[in-house]
Length: 480
Image (cartoon, rainbow, N blue to C red):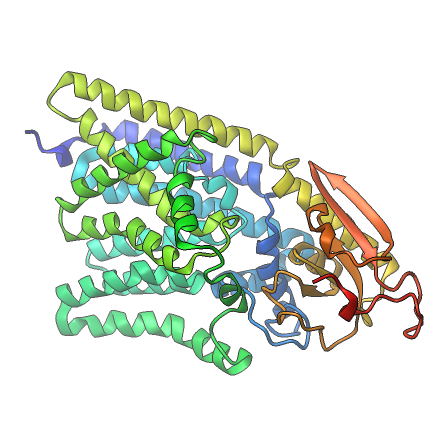
């Protein structure tokens, strides 16, 4: 059998591919710099307050850690003085696009040494074309985490352990579940370097320790309230089904059979990687370690971005398996492997284009963002941020743009069932699916619908500024 690692594209092809990849990065930023996610705005609100001198808090004066990404929090705080209120979310989404491209480039570099350029290109394309939903995550920190992990592995394979430790530490700072990759990588470092592993260990902890110590002092715990709130919110069987079914959701939406195909191919690709040595074994183990951890954590299934690192790597593993077919001895196998790979890439790419072209008006992206920004404008005009605050299941966007304090009815940034210490609760903001939360007698004072998303605002004071007015709705009378 021929040595697959010797299969190389001509230099001219690689140069053209690099130019196309850079052009792709520019186009993705142009297309998705205005991609938005309300959960991302929670972190941006922390960064906004930190940059404004109020400290890393969601509500001024309330030391509660509700962001699961300290790295994204600190990055947004650094960006805010430069980009301002309107520009910061766009800059952060642009960084997500850059990290998306970085994943594709790093996968190519990691795989080509073992399997040559054909398989490496398949693995790169499956990420670049958005088959794992990378485009839907650019407003969050998930693309950065995967890119940093892959960069750490690439540095480690080149024996640049200090750089690997730095990148692995940054990945864990951006999202703690990156430790699932960092710990096995640390074990490889000890195995390879013995006593010299102390240097990289010091660098890794130097990245993480300052935040851990600060969070323990400032918030009382380094564990985010958002993580504790989401912990084991569904049963094992429900989440296991979610893990299985969601793979391939961005390749062929609504076709559950694609999940089975990708699981089989992913496992086959993992076996193929295992045979290439311990470095590639870590890459093969990554998605399964991530899945196992989240089967224990079991957050809300609606928050599907938690599974992104595992799903992205499973799709890469599937391409590794198909790359074996395309480089096999039998011509029939090569044609079948190539046909399946092309079908997956084309389907995933088409659906990515559809998502990207429609994100400005989609229900959970641009539509929701526009609706919440209109609510924020209403509050700025009719409310008093010094003495009033609002309550909602989703608080990120409105708090960021209105500068109002908020009680989070999802309990990610607010103590469960407890009113805020500052100001009075006046406004209730809901998506109509949460109509059961509206107390009897609360008048609707504003509503808007954008891109299929509807937001409604209720005045719990019934327009009266008198704190003793009989028509005011008290918290104790809410239908919870």
